Length: 84
Image 1: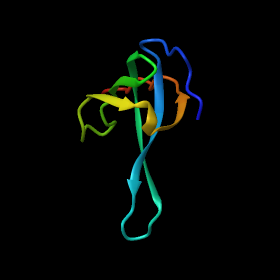
Image 2: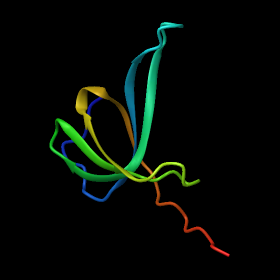
Image 3: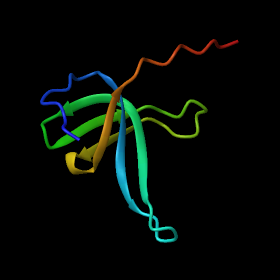
Image 4: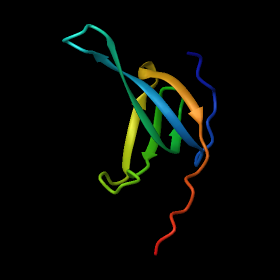
């Protein structure tokens, strides 16, 4: 996939990465990350991964090498949760 030359810091993206091959089936495995861009230098995409909506995972800083990126997709911000 041709990657953009610039990605603005703060943009919210879904990043699909190649995560190896399943030893049982031989099929390629993928992993998706949703978060906000910290930086992109053409070789490494640094994002702050959003925390899980159900609270099971905190936010994480993730660096993704460009050779693992399969797809990028801009996505809107989460709607604020109504707390009762």
